[in-house]
Figure 1 (cartoon, rainbow, N blue to C red):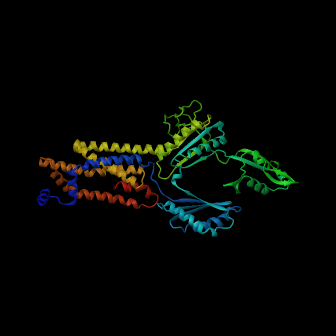
Figure 2 (tube, rainbow, N blue to C red):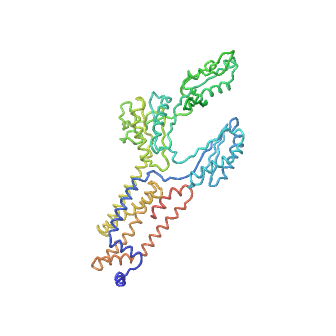
Figure 3 (cartoon, helix red, strand yellow):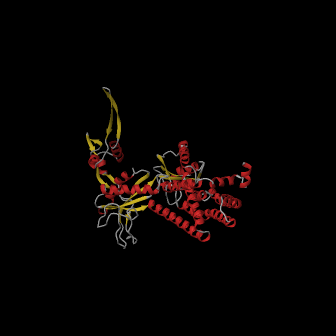
Length: 520
């Protein structure tokens, strides 16, 4: 009985068996539903960003070498560190910048090196050779640098009678609250004048009280500290004693005893002029509206006021002016996301929190303006490419309807969401994000993808027409007839894109989503 069945079918190979299983069961329907579900889940769950992640381990080492000129710093610190750090496995470049009293050495590893392992190698190398560092080096700090340090959301604070000192203090308060938003990596303030208590020593008073600047510095440092002072037991309790003497006001600073003269204490206010206010200006941050102002924008688009809106501006809208306005002093609040976080959701959460804080914390004379929203731009570009993908699918269906017929065109069109859904799921499993390269790969593969179903469906339809009937046996014959060239063509496409995995340099990680998605 089994021999008769084999003879009737005429197909005994494994691939024909697979085709027969799908013909005689509902696995096709299950596969279609499963693919659509996992594809939609991957589309909404996978993090979105504008460009693929490029892993380039990089770190800056800040070395303090006080009392030396730039040439000495280069000879004694920068050059020896360059030679030592270039010996680390995986390091591609070592740069240095020497200046008076300090040096900055930048170590860059090869693209694709594991970031954590690279930083461990660097830290280990510095510790192992700490005895070879030039005497006089007071300290060194290693600060890793990565692409996720670039802010995805920035706000400009302006107003407060153009007082950068007040704007800075408002910004520092907002940063402390925005830093706790989930998946935020860094939050910091750029610009403005920080609060500083300034001590201007009077040389004549110092000399008359027989004091030096070093004495005053040591006294102030000792007074502005908190230290444990021991402990004692009382009953069944251990009481910890701690001395606290942090200086918070000018009055407290002025009452610091800096010496004794003629059996009387000398206070800091006796030998110095004290002030509490903004530090000396070293940089300027300004904000001004350009000629492009005047578009109707939603509340999370760059250029939108999310805080209080003086001068009759409505919150969540921009002014309807189209002329250039003078730039005014401002402070920038910058927020960056954690590695692997969705730029869209993090940006939305940060802006939502900023809108809430603008109502509760922001003074009435200060407005907060969104100056950058990479989450919004990334989402917009991804949605544009998804829309272009949908348009391409519709065009393919229309062309196939003209050439094959509507029923055949719909059968071919089913392959597109099925394969794209599974591809997006694999893309998410391998840790890739949805970005312009990922979606470009899908659009590029669209034409290649529909080739096989078109040939399959057209050959099946031709056999139905020639034999004047439609049976599963005819389907098996039609598919088996064209299977070798279809498989060969598919393998040729896969092989042509796989070499992209071996591209070196920064273009390797950039093009890797295409090397994965097109073959899949």
